[in-house]
Image 1 (cartoon, one colour):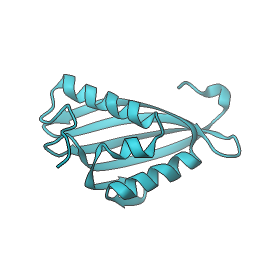
Image 2 (cartoon, one colour):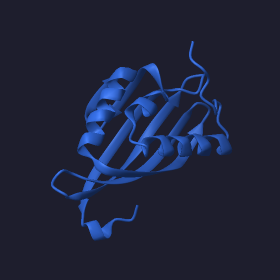
Image 3 (cartoon, rainbow, N blue to C red):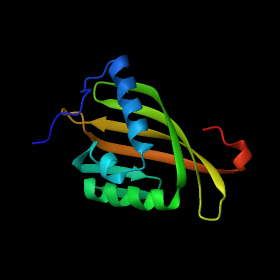
Image 4 (cartoon, rainbow, N blue to C red):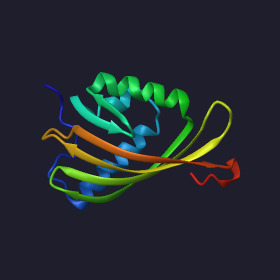
Length: 137
């Protein structure tokens, strides 16, 4: 049995905000091994048009993501919450191998299990090419 990942649901404004900040901090490490541990072993994801099932698939997805999205920097914001669910808006900046910068915007819907692990994550994301001088993160 895995340890509990505090804070646990049901969330309050304080604990929901903390959970979002913890997610932002973890994703900004760009460490698939660390990030995937926030999700249940059988987690279900939709990321853009890709469906991902299980922690091992999450780890492989994140490895591919950060090999493509270089110098990735993310900012998340709590949009709403109820019991064990959250809505989060985010933006992140990155560049590809050719040096083109992008700002990616999106929304995520999260659902947590009773031990504080994310069991469902549904993300809708759009990318906008930007000039390096237009970066804000």
